[in-house]
Every structure is written in C-alpha cells, then in structure tokens.
Length: 475
Image 1 (cartoon, rainbow, N blue to C red):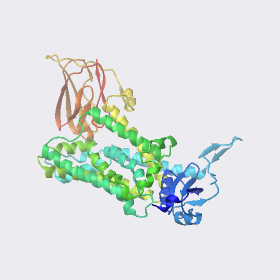
Image 2: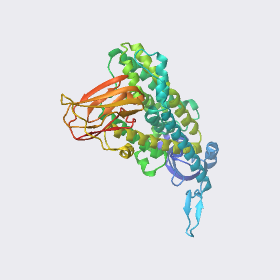
Image 3: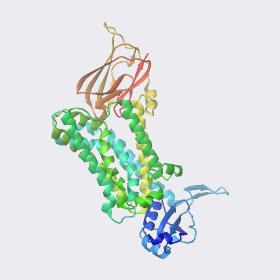
Image 4: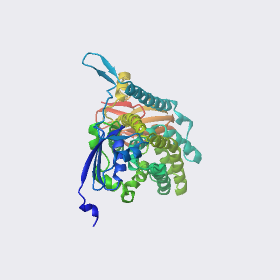
C-alpha cells in the first residue's frame, strides 16, 4: 500500500504574478503536479491564484520561483495587485485614462492581423491559378504548383483555419516540456498524416476510378459549417472569452493528472488522424486534383498526383505550425499569438460560413453586393420545343451571365457555360435547388440541363461558395 494514503492532505494558496492567458494555468498546473507529494493543483487566471493540495512537503515559494523564473512567473503569499486598467477608461471626474501598454499591444496585434488579412485578399486578387493549368496528362510537377496556389487561398481558409485552432490545444499537451521536438510532435504528426493520406487515398482514387469525397452540396456545406462553429469556439477561447471556456474541448482538470503522463495518453495520435481526415474536406483545388487522379487508372499515378498536391500546400501550413511553436515558447508571446490567431480564425469562420450559405442558396453577406447590382430582367423566351436556355461565361474567378437569368417554373432548362479559364473551386459549379451535386466544368462549352421545380431565387456559385453568386430567378 502506498504510504501517501496514510498522509493527511493539506492545502496552500499562493498568488502568481505574470499570468497572461489560460495556457498559463495549464503550464503552472502541469509543472507543479510533478512535485513529490502534490495531489492536486488548480491555477486561476481570474485572480492570479494557485491552489495546491499536497500530502508530503509543501512546495516552497523559493523553489517555485527558481523553476518558473525563466518563464516570467513569480510566486508570493500576498494577493497580486492588478494595476493595469482597460485600454480606455472614463474616471468619475470625467477624465480619460489610457493604458499605454495595452494600447500599444492592441495596436501591434491589429497591425499584424490586418496585414495578414490584406495579404490574403491580395493573393486572391492576383489569381495565380490562371498560371497553373492542370488536366489529364499534365506533368506531375504541375500538381505541386497547384498545391502551392491552393495552400494560400481556399485551403488557407479551411485547413489553415483548422490547424490554427488546434495549435493552442496541442501546445497545452506538452506545455511543461523543455523539449522542442516533443512540442512539435503534434504538428509533425498532423502533416505526416495529411501527406500519407493524400498519397494512399489518391492511389485508391486511381485504382478504383471513383471519387472519395463528398459530392452532396448540402451534406458537405453542413459539415464545413459544423467544423467552423467548433473553430469559432476555439477562437473565443484563444481570445479568453470567459463563457467559451465552458465548451473546452479537452479533458477536465482531474483527468489532466492522468493524461499528463505521456505513457497514459492515447490521444497523442489524434493530430495524425486529424491530418488524415483533411482529405475529406476538399477545397476546389483539391477537387480538381482528385478528379484527375481518378482518371489515371493507376494506384501509383493517382497517389503521386495527390501527394505532390498536398506537398504543395505544405509550406504555408508548416509556416502556421512554426509560428505557433515560436510564439508559444514564452507565456507573454503565447498570449499575443492567441489574440492574433483567434482573430484570424474568427475571420476564416465568417469567410467559410458565408461561402457555405451561398452554396446552400441561403441569405449571406454576399447578398449585399448582389442587391446593389440587381436589375430588372426580362423572362427568357421559350424555343420551338417549349424549352428555355440561359448562358454564362466562366473565367478567372467569376461567372458572367450572358443572358437573362429569369426563367419559368417546370420548364426544361439548358444552362450553357463557356469555360474560358475558370480557376480554383470555380471549376466545380453548384446551384442547390436547380441541380444536384457539383458540375465539373471542362474547358470550352458545358451543357447542364435541369427543370426548376419551385419558384424562388437560386444562387449559382462554386463548390466552396467563394465565387460571387449569380442569381437565377424562377417565376
């Protein structure tokens, strides 16, 4: 029998100066839990207090300060005086107090955040996809180049957002470790899982000649929205929104003592599984690579196509991982990283959900621009067979109507799409309510036939909802 079972449990409360974010709580708890005889630790950012239950010797303040000195924490028996004020505060006498430290920090975070957002949209505007054309028979290096373009566009908004949102969770797994290799382990496993899954499942595409992806616009859109909601909750936790911590996607603290022992923690393989599953969340560029892989009839060729595509997306995703590891090296840097990453994730969530609302044909932020450009159009004339015909051009990253888009209910309709070089997800057209799934647009003229069953206004957009929707009105 363990002799500690006969030892009375004692408790002490200490205060910690230098706590910046929720990750500080995890770091302090994990490190103190390793002390001999310590049974329970509860650190609280709210009041900068740590409660320690122990059965042997009480952890000494001098000993704690020596170990935590490099991390910027100072333990004491007196309550930490929080002198910092909000960025702006109106005093009772009507004067305005400014916390220059917080104001400068908020300024730096804002500059970095908006610089990254501007860079994202500038890259989208460059339309580099027009310089990377892949089709059946294209050389393998072309798929690597396609991946490079995808990594900084639609893949950044979805897969990059997922990676950003998981960085904080993975950081907390090994937050008390001094080994950089161990802290990088979840990221290495994520990228390894992603590259291997694209190679193996890409090979299966070539072998069985069928798409292993979601081709149901409704199911796929709902899946992306659900993932985005989870990302949003994780982002709020990064931004230290108090109520969001109740949705914490990690084990309770009492379980933390068990999982802090790596030998007990089976969930360390979850980053690998997460990387594997990204294959089933294809952006438009991924769909292009998948569609070509399935035509190869070869496991090796299909696997190489998808592997090189994933390898092309790797540099930017690796940059996200390295940034997370670098900024999480010190507590005060962790707090800054969480603010920037949290804001970026919120942006990506809005971007992704808005796009999926377009795919589902529901009201979205895109409608603001569409309403501003709306104009009265005449009804499309019926031909001699009593059918109706509408047309548009697909070019760059947009669909351009070349006829009226007002059609009749219950009449066979032919949609003619002249693909003059559409890019990215634009190569897969979606119009929920008019036709099912995605329509892959080959270069040149594409014919899509459907019969509108219900009156209403429908959106024609790409598989990811990122192409500005074209409205089709059924009367």
